[in-house]
Image (tube, rainbow, N blue to C red):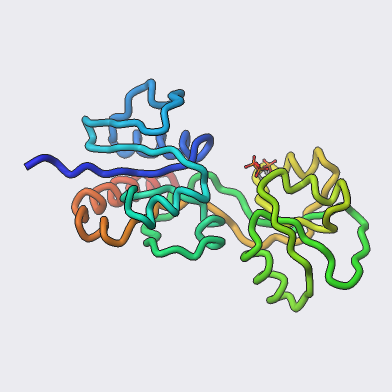
Length: 211
Ligand code: PRP
């Protein structure tokens, strides 16, 4: 019988780099050319692994539909996209947080506009605060919105804080800490439980050791 092949979806860029490092520390042999490849599907037959590289919000879609058994997704994506996948491990990589930000000394009228890539998270945050706002969905470069008068405030990810600073914006409220999570398709978790449990155990050991 052939060995179990496991497909793992992850975003390109920083999460990919940090996840690859974590997998290597957990003993997975990933070839050196792995890191700067432009391929969207990378097979590592020695480890029975296939990687697919996708946009962060789409990783969850691939896992939910079962074309990827596993995925690596930010907690921000998990909160925004209410999907039928299991979150099995906090990888504690790509740490950042969600915050409300805006230009300093702005006065707000009734139902001020809030620009964000996270309409669901932003709506529930302001609802909890008892504040009425109008949410405007954008797909990126959120910091632009207050600068050109599209919105008074934004809800976005802050990592180093450089984007806010260099655009003259200030953080107003911190909403939630974010890290990347290992997510699993429920059917894959039943069919490939041995491989997945082994991976979770090995990654957990690395994460615990790094504390
Ligand atoms: C993210 C986020 C902020 C920025 C924060 O954007 O939306 O804009 O990074 O990082 P910093 O605090 O280190 O400056 P990303 O680069 O993912 O692109 P996007 O604007 O297209 O969402």
